[in-house]
Every structure is written in structure tokens, then in C-alpha cells.
Length: 384
Image (cartoon, rainbow, N blue to C red; front, side, top):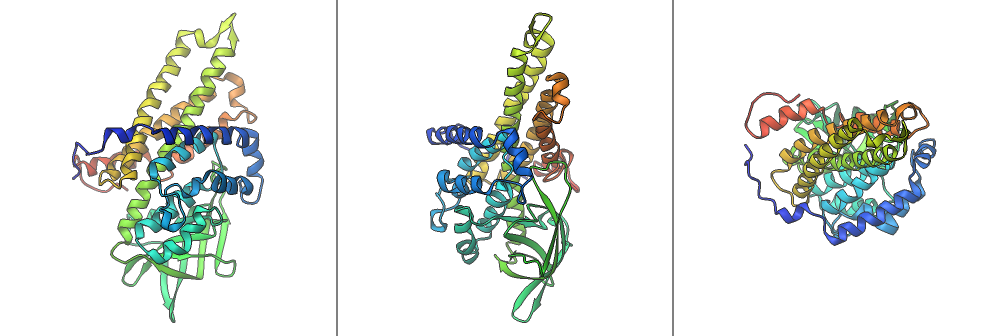
């Protein structure tokens, strides 16, 4: 059972000057390079994003290495700085694999405590030359992962399948939770066409690609210890929820700003529609929800930044609040734009798709409510 009064420094919930400067730089960067038309153009490319922009984001701004320790080629900041970058990427609907590479895979390596694996992969994640993802982590609540690992001579090979893997069709590295005779273990696999079949899935949100990955004797190396595998997976998923919450806050902020701007310009009956009380009330509801989401996200970010034991609680709460806020904000984004908001040409539908997809990415809001109730001792039972 978790304490009801977590010990988090209130100062950590506010942005520092460095974080504000980073936000300003990223806001300008995404405004210049990641407009709605840019997003649509990038979706038509083989990797689903502009690889030159990916390299610029890593090299010029250093986003990929923000939360990576200096000993592994990173900047040595914390998750708090990375959350700023994630919020701005969510605001711009940036479609490169930041979440699977920089959040999930990088943090799985760090949480594993495996220095050899960290030294091998983290420098390339930090400089933008390696994309990575995780697979089989959603099976952490089950004793039967869908991927098995067996020893073939002196090496390990993977067999089985993992579905809806983020960036699964293009990632250079996949960290896989697999079943072994001694229990679940974490493995690093650099997939090749002859041992790994990767099939892109048709998904609602095309800005976040997913794939079915089938391992057919794919060589892999063990990462971390057997005893620490489940803790590594759980911590990675909690960090992923905190990261996704930051993205959702950014997307919600864009939806509200765009709708307020439109309501101030669109004329009806000789006056801006934003002057009508009914419209004001709806926009005010979104603003109140956004402030609540921002608070929940900030708390989850602070917990992730200091590796607080309250992170599971904070991450689940943020998942619920931020998902519902993003859904509300994007619904009003469409409806208050009137007829144009329902067209494919308008960017609103891209944000609606992201909101609906993100809502179930690490489990539904109902599942997170059940899990949250368990964590704070209100109930018992399965969160599945």
C-alpha cells in the first residue's frame, strides 16, 4: 500500500529557467518543421517520419540524450527535461518514434542496471543513430509471455510473436520480455529479415506506427538479471505512462489554443462565436480539464525524475486524467470548428486519432482506475 501523502518537493512541479528555454526552442523547431502538412507528408515515407529532422532533434537540440547519463553519451538531465520535449512533440503531433526509443527502450536499459547493454546501445540512442522499442511488456501481468527464449549452443534465440509493437517494423533494436525455463527474462534483439518477420499493422493513429513481430530463431542477448526483470518491465511501463501523459497534455493544449483562436475569428450573427455563452462554457470546461491534466502530468513527471516509489500511483492517475482530457479537448476541437472540423483536410482529425489511440496504449482508463484503487489499498483483485 502506498502512502497517501507522497514526499515530492513542490519546487519540482514548476518549470526551471532551463526547461522554459528548452520549451521555447522546441516550440519554434516544431512550428518550423512539423506543421499538419509536414506530418501528412512524412506519413507517406517508408519510416513514417523525416529522418533528417530526427537527426537534427538529436544533434542540434540533444532531445534523445536528455535523460541519458553522461557516462553513456547523454546530457545527464532527468525525466523532467525529457517530459518538456515530449509535451512539445505531442503538441505538434511529431510522428517520429520518440516514445518507443527515447522513453521505453532507453529507460528499460537504464532500469535493468546492465552496464554492458547500456554502453552498447545508449550512446547510439542519444546521438540519434539507433531507433529502438520494446516487445512483450504488455504480457507482464501474465505468467505466459508470447515470446519464448531458448538456448542454442552458447547463445539465446527467440521464438514467438509480439503484436502491436510500437515502431516494430523499423526499429533497429527490440528489447523483448520472453519466457525461459527459469522464468521471464529481458533480451536485446537486433532483428534481421531472415530471423524476424515484421508486418506493419493498420492502426487508427498513423502517426504512431505499430507492427506484428514474429521471431523465428532470432539471436538475442540477455539484459539484466532474472530477479530484476519484472521490476524493470513495470518501471518502464510506468515511465511510459508518465511520458504519454506529457504528450497528451501537449496535444490537449494545441486543441484548446486552436479552438479558442477559431472561436475568436469565426463570425456568426455579426459577432465572434466565442462571444456566445454556450461556447465560452465549453471552452472553459476544456481549460479546467487541461489544468487538472497538467497537474497530474507534472506530478508523474516529478516522480519519474527522482525514481519515487509513488511513480506507479502517479502514472496511473495521470493516465486516467490526461487521457480523458485529451479526448474532451479533441472532441471540442472538431465540434466547435463546425463543418470544417469534420473534414479530412483539417488537422483536427489527426489529433482525434492520436487521442483515441493513446487512450488505450498502456491499458484503458478503466484498467488504470482499478489498478490505482489497488495501489492505494481501496480494493483487491485483478486489474486486467
